[in-house]
Amino acid sequence: MRRLLCVGVVLGFSAGAWGQGIPPSRTGTFALTNARIVTVSGGVIERGTLLIQNGKIAAVGPNVTIPQGAEVLDCSGLSIYPGLINSYTQVGLIEIGQIPETRDESEVGAYNPHMLALTAINPASTHIPVTRVAGVTTVISAPTGGLLSGQATLINLHGYTPEQMAVRPSVGVVMNFPSVGRRSLFQQQSEEERRRQYEQQLRQLNELWQKAVAYNRAWEAYERNRSGEPPLWDQRLEALRPVVRGELPFLINVNAERDILAAIRWVRERKIKAIFAGVAEGWRVADSLAQSGIPCIVGPVLALPTRPYDRYDRAYANAAALAKAGVKIAIGTFDYYNARNLAHHAGMAAAFGLPKEEALKAITLYPAQIWGVADRMGSLEVGKDATLIVTDGDPLELRTQVRYLFINGWLVPLVSRHTQLWEEYRRRAF
Image 1: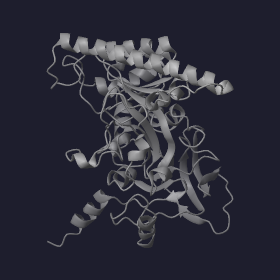
Image 2: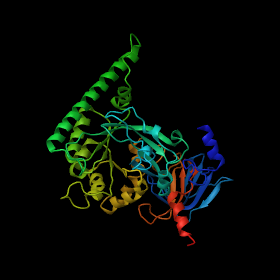
Image 3: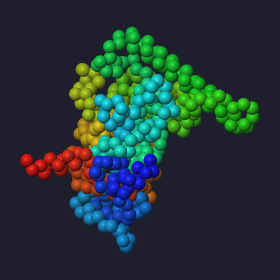
Image 4: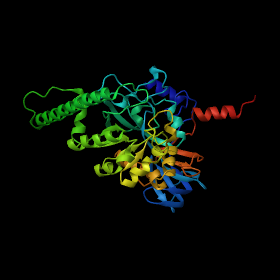
């Protein structure tokens, strides 16, 4: 691996883009001047300057002293926003959906709480620069499959190794909450068969949770005095100890109305820290979700209604209904190949009732708060990571282009397989 890194540096490959012909990123002291700075957390600064030093935002405001030697980027007519955060993807875990050898998002078996998605991230994925060019600097990459899929990871889309990309190696154990509903149009099970499966899965889940609680209690008792034989070590139950202690949430995929209500009861009864994901029918139970205090990752926004008799715009307006009820929301695209469309999802939510400022926060500040990294990202404040974008317009508008993109102070080239193909065919000679 070390030899591979050296080769990449010598050839000038950008971090996370080996062999893709993407120029290298560079770092240093940058002064972004004459920009409209949308801080998200503290209003808008017209014609301000943002100073980047040592990977952090060193200063931001209308009157910033620019140190000698800083590289000045004149941003007249441009706006600066925090980097966009996609709160649910499989970026880095899947390369080509139809080729099993390029997929590493799912493990064998129903219960894999010990599996870390970070260890399977491919920093050289072509989806990373494609997603980055659209202004998405940071994503949650979550495993799939089974009832407990593994642990989702929060990564920046820049780095030669998964460890370099990691913001938080683990942000929660992914759970696919048992459902009595039909999961897809292709599911052939009868309602009775689905009911029996639901009850069996819920019973197994409850038994596993009881074991995890007992396991944690036994280990805490042993760790207090270290006398006698230690309890038998179990990898799966060990992975659930942070959840039992409330240090890590369950990231619960749940979509149907009655499943959401059942999941709220399940979480409440066990006093578990949880984040819901999907919540396609959240608008039907928005008040219950608000009362539960459980934050929700809403998406995909660009989707069909879950029931044939629902209005065409239910998925588009779901985020607005939840926010209006008082639910803390973030938005995710729930895919890997179009994670770049995050701003489009947020823009559609804004077009169907979510206040524009809230839509922007749902892909910047709110996900940073939900994932526990608001001290590092999500808004433009002194001391936070210099992870930001410079655009020629509102990022929620489809026509807006990203002109500069920084991740941890690295100025990352806005080049991807898509832009390379565009350039090639734009200049074709025949």
